[in-house]
Length: 401
Image (cartoon, rainbow, N blue to C red; front, top):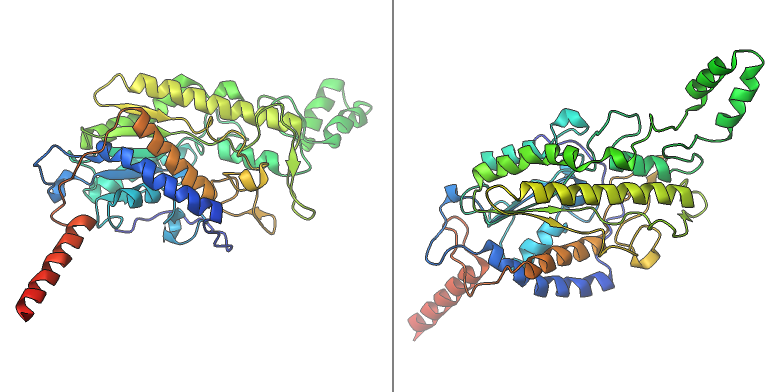
């Protein structure tokens, strides 16, 4: 079923996996075997259609993978090689929607209601999954990355992705306590002879843009309490529909270098750069998101059913947009003056790595594979289909004798 999703412009580059990425994919297949225990059902029980699918993926563009190869649903930038797709393929869960898994992730999604900053919310996605009967007692795992599009404190520069994009554009320093450029320092002096000093400062701020704490999202605006309040309705909605599922909140990767690292800039003609102060600010913001989500998940895990946090900040260190060939995320990709949808998002290699991290997390938390899994009546597993073809082949061979 197609849903009325927002439009995201995909990159025309059609970038696919690199040779290094294909090598990583082999690692993902091996590591993802560990997730099989999470998706296993009690022995002897077959799934009915109303029981839900084994695995359901939700989330924003860091889940959906805009601009990465073929899109299963272009309006959401939902790539066929995002981390959910890679894990499902490694586990042999069949074709998305028709097999044993579904992906409802959508670029621009928020944790809260859609009016909190994005065109859709994770609650909308849960509603789509519920409509399709993808969530149910047989659902074993639900994953999502969410929160980067949410408004937090109603500031003009609010939301992780919006702040990242604003800061990386060259020519204007960003962050709390920094002004937008030389004009912001020159205007007050120029206006002082014409207006009282206080009024001169106010007018200068209005004309030049005053990037004080009142305008920019600060790391301490992203709190555990606010994050818990945003995630709680989604976790509760999933739990009502899929009481046996493990819910995994997958964090955000290290998009920019860690504080203290040198900055970087695009080649001549591409208007983007990062200086040391901007890196310090953005790294602090990414750290705040990581800490707040980790604490929120710990709080929500005290209810019925497991809720887990998958840390991407640590394993992606050194793989930021300034890391060149080692980067897991794309730098700004421009069309004119606009960023394309995959800018500052995981690359194809990054999605492979993230799939491996999620699978390794499953292994580390004690999720063990089982010898066999029962099949769905409506969508036979790949193993069952192969066995059926072999049986048909044997029958034809016997008939020819």
